[in-house]
Structures are given as structure tokens and as C-alpha cells.
Length: 399
Image (tube, rainbow, N blue to C red; front, side, top):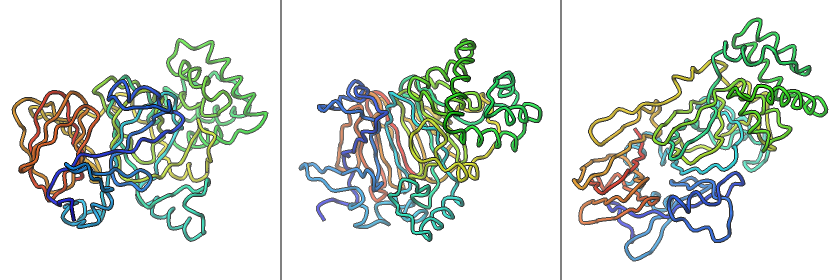
């Protein structure tokens, strides 16, 4: 084949035009053209069928990454092939101008069981009410490039009590009172589930009462978030979520890990997102899309995630910051580039992304220069490479 198993290649990456995306963030940060003025939500890097990257050789010829891998998966993927049988990760740049839905990603065992059950039931993969699109889990790491507002995990139960104990919301009053009198996982589960099942006139009345309180208490961050979200979802019961979930703003350079079975939502900002290659999403509000509340409740861990434990701290060795990802599907390493080349070896396929400045990547007789926003693919068979330049380079692989 024209593309060599041991060569590194520049990548062409698809852009997803989801409605919540920014129209100018990628242009301002990376010079990405947007001639049709569409929302540009995510740049995808990987071999996922819903958005597969292409590789470009020195003559401008292209090949889809999945087709390139298919030529010799063992040589190109290396350890990733031995451990997963495929490229196990997906890497994105995400630009949220509007809030995304509140989501939960099932764990591996639940994903396998749910995928098999929905297949057996004959539910098409493209069906709007399909919950499990594949048999994989979807843990994620997000790294902020701009201030990045999000919700992640349940607040400490005492904090939830202080926020909701004086609320008068008839449709939820029994569950609110039960949780405040006995704040534990099962009463939180009942409250969370009840909040997502309120419909019709009861929902309108509940949201109106919640917003009235939020206006009175908008000096408190949680209620201020309720008001902000109401501009986008004026009658959605997801507006109750900031009172239950941690609301956090990551500063540029900060990161957090999003575990399976944990409710979370990205609200605004630009960040890098590394994840296992899965598209399994159970929604929990702030969306007009299908919500399966029973499946959601079965896949949520109703445990508190203290706010001071949300940030992920890297292990720093000289110019290299390695993030302690607790799954094997992907790794995330940040390199502060310098004129002196940093040499590396690999036994697995890598994606290198220039997040800032410029990067020079050398492997064998090849040299690629990446500007901010550009990426390249390093097959496992390349085995060794060196990086230099000015700025920041992100390396995504598997463990």
C-alpha cells in the first residue's frame, strides 16, 4: 500500500456541527474556517464510525484512519490491538457555547448487558429510544483551554440539604422532605428520579416555583446556575440539577475525570476531551431528547463527590505532565515543548495534538510541523519519535 506502516501522518479531522457548539471558538483559537457560519461543537480525532479522521501523506493523498488500521491492525495499533482489538480511544476538542444535556455513561458490564439486551429486542442502533449504541464504557477526561463551566457528580449530602430544605415544590415535596430528614443514597435516588418524572402542568408549576426561589437566592452559585440554564431550557426539570450536582469552573490548564455512572454536564467553554471509544449516553435533563429514567437510575451511583476531589492532578516530570487515568483505554500526556528535542518510544498507536504554539515531530527520516489545532498519527510500528518546538503538545494513547 502507498501508506507505510512505520510512517507518521498528518491528520484531517471531522467537525461535528451540533447545535450547542460555538460559531467562532475554533476559528479564533486554531484558524478553522467556518464559511457557512454553522455551530462547530467538536473536532474528532480517532477512528470512530460516527466521525473518522483521515491521514494525509506528503503528496496530499488521503486514507481514512480505520482503513489504514485495517491494513495491519497488530502492527499499527500495537498494544492497543493486543488489549482491545481496535483503537480504544477518541480525542476531541469541544467548544460549548450553550449547555449540553446532563448525562450518565454506563460502566463496562452494564454497557455489555444493555447492548446485548437491546440487540435481542430488535431495537435499531439508530432508534431515538436506543440507550446502548455499543458494548463499551465511556470514562472521560476534560482539560480546559478556556474557563470551562461544568457539573460533575453529586454534592456532599449536607450541601444538598442546605440548598433544598426550604424549597416548596409540591410535585417533589415528599421526596425533598424525605431526603432532608434522612440524607442517604436511596432517598437521593428517589428525589433525583422524581425530579425527572414531573410532567405537564405540574412541571410548569414546579419550574416556576424553583425559578422564583432562584431569583431570591441568586447570590448563591447553585441558584445563579439555575437562572443561567433557564435561559436555554426554560421548562426543563434539569434546572433542579445544580442543587444536587457540583458546579465547577475549570481554569485553563485544569482538568477533571468523569467516571462511569456519574451525572455530569458541560455548560460552557472550550476544552480537550479524551475518552474511551463509545457513544453510550443516558440523559438526565437539559434536553428535548429521549430520557429513559428507569435505565438512568439503574446506572447511577448515588454517592457524593466532594468538590475538593474533582480536579485531577498530573504527575510532573520535567516538561512532561502525565495524568493518572484510572482506565486502560486511554492515556493523556501534556508536553511543554522546547527547542531541545524530547525523545520518546511507543508500543501503541498515538495521536499527537498541538494545543498551543507549534510542534516539530520527527520519526526516522520524517519531519512534520504541527501548528496549533493540528494533529498527527503515530503508528505503533513507528516505535520512536522526538518532539520539539514552542507551546504545548498533547499525546493520547492507551495503557
